[in-house]
Structure formats: structure tokens, C-alpha cells
Image (cartoon, helix red, strand yellow):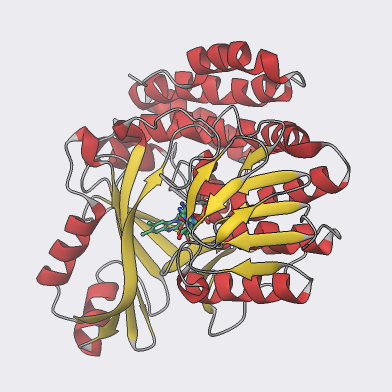
Amino acid sequence: MTAIPDVVIVGAGTAGAAAALHCARAGLATVCLDRRPLGEAGARWVNGVPAWAFDETDLPRPVRPELRGDGAPFHLVVGWGPDRLTVDRHGVLEVDMRALTDRLQRLATAAGATFVGDARVTGFDGADRLDTTAGPFRARLAFVDASGLGGAGLLPSPTIPRADICAAAQYVHDLADRDAANAFLARFGAAGGEAVCFTGVAGGYSIVNVRVHGDDVSILTGSIPALGHASGARLHADFVAAHPFVGPARFGGARPIPLARPHARLASARVALLGDAGSQVFPAHGSGIAAQLVGARLLADALSAGEGPLGYQRRWQRAWGGLFAAYGVFRRFSETLSPEDLGALVAAGLLDPDGARAGMAQRWPRPDLTHLARLARAAARYPGAARRLAPVLARMALAPAIYRAFPRDPARVPAWDRVASRVLDRPTA
Ligand SMILES: Cc1cc2nc3c(=O)[nH]c(=O)nc-3n(C[C@H](O)[C@H](O)[C@H](O)COP(=O)(O)OP(=O)(O)OC[C@H]3O[C@@H](n4cnc5c(N)ncnc54)[C@H](O)[C@@H]3O)c2cc1C
């Protein structure tokens, strides 16, 4: 009879493949399965991933062709312009997710993990037996649900409200007319390789982010349709139709992204949620990859330390939950902003390159004294904008303390979550 593995992971996308890699490296017998063929698992487009997420999880940074851009200036344009601010030194890499998923799967296989493609979950008894189209699986220590939003559902989780779902699209196109593309970029002070990101074009949260790179045009769009706005797919189609320098699409995709606060209950005694399945997405711009890479590492550390899935839940919430919840408060505020509001915040200096850089890198802003003094002067000059921002920043500041108190006892998590929700999930006026 085949030995029962320590860990069975559902989903071989970035979250599942990273978990398989770290579990196998930690010496755990690991099986990772996916309902799709393995070469088609996970995201199939280009994502921005902060370089630190690779460094902190002992993964070599991507190189070409997986790496498609490495931190060139990012021009954040208010509405369709002309006001903008430019963020450099943000450290966000443009990564071809097809290649990253493939690399993670290959590294995990080399470390001893077993991958099974075309294996769809058909049932789970909640503890010991996972049924799939490739037969039943058992696990000695844990089952990991890394099957994405609306995936296998190994652990009962709250439904994510539609107002907390971003509809995003990302496609890489042929460049059809270089001169016209250069003229377009020049209007926003940008050069080839740099991102021009129109923000607030379909609700305060929305973006249309365009990058001309070599012979490609890369377009990322996202919005929250439940708030009455065009979807990311619509924004993408409209931009392409209006800009003939964009040629046929080469690859990419469109999908919903969960923006809600990461699930408070990320684990039971036998099951751990990882990635989109746990809503572990940096909400200010719907970015899930860094959270999954660090989450995969914490999961393997907790399992190999004998703390089980609940140890992982505690580690992740205490280390990362506060940051994600704080930026969730900011995300809700951003939804209320019109292009005029955004322009006022930029003009006042309350939304500045330092703050934007921290948000892009998924880090806490670390203002120095000069920066704080500049913000204070801006707040004094523009009291209206400051009055709107102050309560948002105050609630963001509470998030770390709330998450540092994440309970050890899983029975106390629902009560903790109710308190967290009262402070962190309220709509922002
Ligand atoms: C257009 C777009 C742009 C984005 N841009 C960024 C960005 O710039 N930066 C960033 O960090 N993030 C970005 N994101 C988010 C990021 O892509 C996701 O957070 C990430 O891909 C989710 O990975 P995952 O492994 O959790 O889930 P998935 O990628 O959904 O993988 C889950 C896997 O589980 C498998 N599966 C599902 N159900 C079952 C089942 N029942 N049985 C077996 N297998 C199953 C699926 O086949 C799939 O392969 C973007 C998302 C979109 C849609």
C-alpha cells in the first residue's frame, strides 16, 4: 500500500505550488493536485510582484523570460490625466505567472513533492478523506486548500460580498504602431518600459495600467462592478478599441479577485486555506502573489514545527493580517474618491510618491521627519482633504494591534473577528 503523505494540497497555481515547494523542502511528504493539466494551473497572465517576496521566501528572483519588467518608473495618472505623480524605486517586478507557476512546480518536484494533474475534488469528509476524479487521498498532517476563489471549498468560509470583488483583466498584446505608442507615452511623460496607470476612471478603486515593452503592450485593468462600474474586461476592450497602436492579444485572462479582509478562520485542525481561497490578497490593488509566497513559507514552518494548520493561521494573521486589514480600510476609502478628489489629494501632497511607493510594495509607509513635516503642512493648507483622510489613517493605525491580539484558541476567533469587523470593515464616508 502507498504511504499516506504528510500534506495534500488542492490547487497547483502559485499558492499551491509554493506550498508544495516549502513543505517538500521542510522534509514533509507532499502531494499537490489540480483539476487542470499541470501546465495550465493558476494565473495565465502577468502580475506585479514585489521583489522582497522572493528574497524573504528563499526563492531566486525571476529572470527573463519569466521577468518582464524590473521596477521601471510608474506614472500614476489622475483619471485620464493630465495630473499625475511618478513613483520610482518601488521594487515591483513584472512577472509572467505561467513561468513562475511552472518554476515553482519544477522546484517542488525537485525537492520531492508529487504533482497530480486532471484531479478535481469531488468530496471531502472534513478531516481524513478527500475524493477526487483521480481517486481518494489521505493526509497525515493537513489538507491545504489553495484552489482559488470559488474553488474546492474544503473549509466553510463566508461568502465574499460582491462589493468586495474586483473584476480584473490582464493581456499582453502585439505592438501595432511604435510611433503612435511613443506619442501616447510622451503625453504622460513616460518612456518605453514604464507604466502609465490611469486611476479612478471607473470608480475610485479602478485602474487602466498600460506598459509598452519591446514589441509588447501590456494592459492591466480592474474595477468593482458591484458599485455600478464597468468591469475590468470592459475597460480593457474599450481601451484597445480606442488605441490602434494596440495589436492582437498574445496571452492573458480575466477573473474576479477577492478584496475582503483575509478570512479570520484560515484553518481548522486539519485544513489550511492559502491564497485566493483564504482571501489573502493585498486589497489596495488586488495583489495575491506576495501574500501566497510568504503564506506558503509560514505554512510549511508551522507544519514542520508540529503546530498544525492552526499554528499557520496564528502565524499568518499576527504577521500579515494587520497590514492587509489596514490597506483594506484604505481600499474602501479609495472607492469613494472621484478623479477631482484624487487630484486634490495629489495637489495637496497628501497622496505622494512615498505613500504610493509603500502601497505598491505592500509595506507600511515609513515616513521620515521631513516627510511628516511636509504632510502636516499640506494638511494645514488643505483642511478639507485632511479631514477626509484623518479618520481613515486612524482606523488603519488600529489594525496592527487588533491582529497582534489574534487568539491562540480557535474557539475565540469568531468573537475576535466581530470586534475586528466593527473597526475595520465599516464603509468609509
Ligand atoms: C487580471 C488579474 C491581474 C492580477 N494582477 C495581480 C498583480 O499584479 N499582482 C498580484 O500579486 N496579484 C495579481 N492578481 C491576483 C493573482 O493573480 C491571484 O491572487 C493569484 O493568481 C491566485 O492564486 P491561487 O493559487 O490562490 O489561485 P488560482 O490561481 O485560482 O489557482 C487555483 C488552482 O486550483 C485549481 N482548482 C480549483 N478548484 C479545484 C478543485 N475543485 N479541484 C482541484 N483543483 C482545483 C485551479 O485549477 C487552479 O489551478 C491578478 C489577478 C487577475 C485576475
